[in-house]
Length: 476
Image (tube, rainbow, N blue to C red):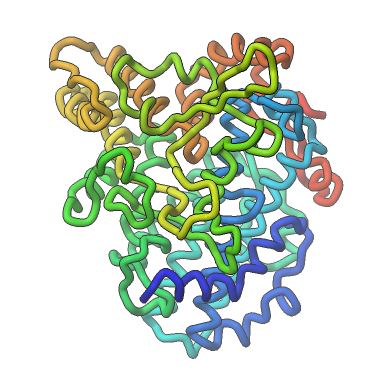
């Protein structure tokens, strides 16, 4: 199966992603939206409905680039270089009617809705191939868990919806984050049991060399992350170790090869859909790379805080960061921008958007091992990432537990920058956000920082449409 074939079939249902601006809590999901009896009667149409989610996630308001840019500006990774609609996020002054926050909420719940439709449509079908039915249901559970994870980390307590009944979803209230995590874990454990260990191709039956549909390792990667966030360190270590042990499939690769399509470091990527006349490989490359001007190219650059986090000799600063000099001002100003992806547009597809990769898994395991008192093992995992970046290994016995945890935290900052909201979520889950943002927010022109800004506001449009939704503190 070629990547061209898979992209073409993703395109068939790409309207799924383009519909992400619709409201969630009061949208009908049966009948005219997805005609379940017809769609889930056939293996091909059922598969294509699921593939439409992945195509939409690459292009829509909640693409990896949009998530990374929004949280990078909210935190201390990125600086705004031009006045734009991102200014409120950058200054930590997001309002309930802000279009960026609204679009992320709406897109996330849209994909949850379609995942629910796929799950229950397959569940009720009596004509789908049993193996395909099992695979599609498992992928739907994974997608639902994935979006619950992002929504709860952005907005806090959120509605849990596992049904397609509009009469139920319209009246949902917010669920405590601890219970959201329990739902995520339950979904992932069931998905892990049923999903195939191999990457599946366009027909959901044949195996594929394309790593663009989640497999069992992908589910384990999200489970490891969730267990880390919920401080279930033994469980997170177990999930991470299971992936690391698959060294015939997953290995660390050279820095310039990490973000190539289907690199051996890839656990899951998103591919661009077709038609793609501009030959945009990834939304990250298209939005982060500055080639012409600050106004037309991305409107953000790497912050001084992030630049200072790199040690002398760290090859990631050389390989994954590039510069743009604005000669239109006097004196000229040089800006730094993320350069993990090398293609902005106009080239044949050689990069895919990275969602999960092995380096994160090593860092998850290192952090868990440190918390569990396994300092030698934690240091060994940490040093694998450091040495790949051209840094010297840290000798044993130099760092105590707290120092090692802080070193791992810093390593996550320079390894995972502008990927998957890692830095913003790390600041919050480790309790460091108050100290960091007390300095960053005033420096960005946002006034004094307060704790309520850790969470984004529930969109006012959703509050007005869903009677049981309550706004986050500080945004009433």
